Image 1 (spheres, rainbow, N blue to C red):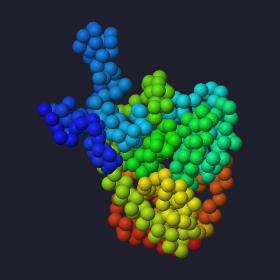
Image 2: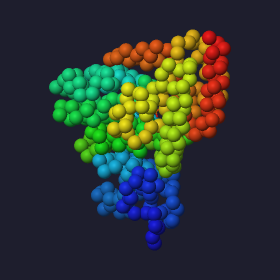
Image 3: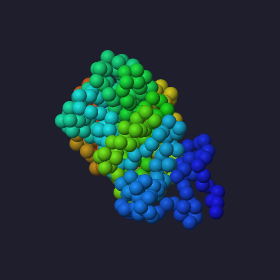
Length: 397
Ligand SMILES: *Cc1c(COP(=O)(O)O)cnc(C)c1O
């Protein structure tokens, strides 16, 4: 029996790998997709097999045909540096699992000041309690990070760009220093996904996705993934095993379903996001657009060097306006829902203030800040919606 799209050799282009990887129709009597395997116990046919732990699967927590398919797609997407992929029940769990896997009491951790706020809470809370010291650094520090290293610095956590302020750290420069100093680089790559930012090829040792966002893509799962290179994977695999981390089969399946269409969804988010960002630059109500794919953005040169695309998430700084005027905008727009998370098919808007929590750098944007996620709606409808929002903002000034 042979099914033409199967096989271990994947063509080179990532869009193709997203479609062909992780498929084994022969094992599924010809069906394209694996079943959603709900399973704990795996039966061994003989005592000899049991003693030798022989067989492709040993126990539900350690993997099923559904998790294997998703891991194979993600491995193919990350590229040849990827030695293994772990699946977690949320993006935050991917970050905490990665940190717990590589750190021990007495270690020092360097964390970029623009990382996802709950990542900071984990460092300041649980890691501090377990005897790991964290130092935050300016996202624009580059090779200057050298001065912050201590003899016990074991890891660096980055996010490029930060998902509120959109500053773009120079990850290859940071990684070069980290590797000389014997530290591992962990990158939260949720914004660009491995499709637009091959972080493992740029000095990152552990690349994390909040797959809740673009991998899932439909605002219907909580999910996380951890991809690691050959140097970091043994630590990760051990950490995952010892912690007992695994993800539920229905969510694994939805992540697999989502990732198959990642390239078309992300291309549209990129196109619409950039068009909206350029349109907002021309609006009199907007002081600044924070989007690294815009030529005038301070992070543009790094984005152009290290990324092949952008997602649909960016921020704007409004000209000074009272809270009630900003609230009038938020209450007027209808296609832009107000809510946390992003990466689904729908547009979102949320006010934010990094000044609440940053410690290594000052956040003084000079006006109210809004984060926008540009979904898959018609860009003309979205502009018209924001147009109504700006009219309401002006009326309430
Ligand atoms: C949402 C998000 C996370 C956390 O993901 P959850 O699935 O919500 O736990 C981590 N990092 C970034 C950049 C995120 O946007």
